[in-house]
Amino acid sequence: MRTPLAAASAAVIATLLLAASGPAGAPPAVPPKDERLAWWRDARFGMFIHFGLYSTPAGTWDGKPVGGVGEWLLQNARIDPIAYEKTLLPQFNPVKFDAREWARIAKDAGMGYVVITTKHHDGFALWDSAASDYDVMATPFRRDIMRELADAVRAEGLRMCWYHSIMDWHHPDYQPRREWDARPVDPQSFPRYVDFMFAQLKELLTKYGDIGILWFDGEWEGTWNHDWGKKTDDFVRSLQPRIIVNNRVDSGRAGMEGFSADEHARGDYGTPEQTIPPNGMPGKDWETCMTMNDTWGYKASDSNWKSARTMIRMLCDIASKGGNFLLNVGPKGDGTIPAESVERLRRMGEWMRVNGEAIRGTTASPFPKQFPWGRVTMRSLNGQWQDVTRLYLHVFDWPADGTLRLDGIANEAFAPKVLGADDRTPSVARDGDSLVVTGLGAAPVDPDCTVVSLGVHGTPRVQAFMVRPAADGTVACMAADAIVTGSIQYEDRFANLGWWRDMASEARWPVRLAGPGTFDATIDYAASAECGGTAEWMVRSGGKAVASGTAELPGRTGWGDFATVSLGRVDLPAGDCEFVVKARRKNGDSFVNLRSVRMAPVK
Ligand code: FHN
Image (cartoon, rainbow, N blue to C red; front, side, top):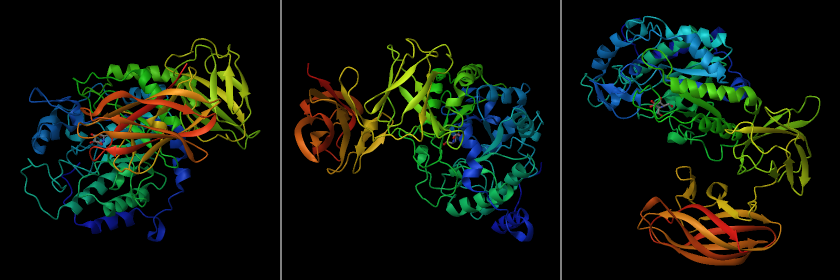
């Protein structure tokens, strides 16, 4: 516990790197990514913990409420960093902190790892740091929270992981400074700050045992760049070669969507924040981090809690897309986890105790799109007693007739069962290119999500996604299912196709009908007042347009102001065709936000 290092220069980095390297200066070999990430991919579900000085004021300053997330108090209340330190250090005394309780809550929820803020943007160190006086040992609490939590988490069989902020509003050498920070600035100070950060990272990676993940954050300010990112990534891996490092160690993350545009960017996985990639990110590792209400650090006034059902379904959705779910708790200043969080995690744990095999160790759905009734994950049993895959059907909307269809799969299936209901005896049969599971029972086992597991021989052989008529004959072309060209992008804000800027762009849906049909088509769209235009639709079959039409889509009051207007009558042929929408004319620089095209059969 000392005053912040008045460290020398980037040369210190080389020394730290060398000191951490193996014999003859060569850094220890970093194992292959698949080997390092195996436990993390298997775990699928982790606990994020935002805990620090900000937890005590809980979203207030000088007795007044402060807007924004709890852990951004210094920034949002424009507090002088030294005043923040002098005020909050003496107040930090989480006397009810019980690391074993936190670890037990995570374990009982079905989580496999815990990521805690060793240092957030305010620069406060939650461990006994030799590199700084601004640490937990300078508070009345005087206990090494990282030590206690690491021991407790490991005792529960979970992996301990560190969050660490690159951005540091308190350290005199970090730049850019907060604009209200009146302390003198040395323009050459940033390398010294990096040396300080390296010294603290070295403490965290050499004194607390094996760390599963280094979860960097705060990499978005201009002083951080790819060179610093590479140096930091190399340094961390030189200390713990098996560690996983997220993509926020480097610069260039594309905002809250969480993926790095540059293929050379460092980091083992992408970090979508408060969002779930609508179609996953095939071929990439990623983890959605999410708050249970709207704040990461505790904020007494934030009661906007997500339901347990919402978060169970998020877990299923994320797993079905091949991602991990890092779900946050923000402990209070007294060291307890809010009751609302504990209650929800308890419910998630109940669900995981029955259905955990459908999450842990599974991989993304083999189907190109999700089904209307829920999500799919799978577990390959190849290489064991026979070449078999188990599919897990996560049913959100239970079919009253106890029947589920899996369209577009060629494999033969066997041994369907309803998890948590061994007394039910469903069966499975083939119907054309679909598998049909019947006898599932009229009611779900768990209304939040009931899982049906199904064995298939071999690796799933699925067909390309096709829009098929729903039970009532309606053909629904949804934004998330569209194949798009040109500038069009899917936006999960309104579950719409947006950025429809160039006239060459088109959205198309492959459609499969058992027989020909005539439909009344409508389009659900939004547009700002100066945009909109004329839509052109086509039905393509065998590469030729066999039907077409236009419809006026006048501007509306904004990109979230949706309306449903007629596209007219559409004849669709039997078999496979494509339904296509283009802009024939646009009034402004963008055309429309398109949410769906629905075709209702003409009786
Ligand atoms: O600014 C932080 C925020 O406080 C929180 O820690 C989240 C968690 O991922 N990360 C940053 C915002 O992207």
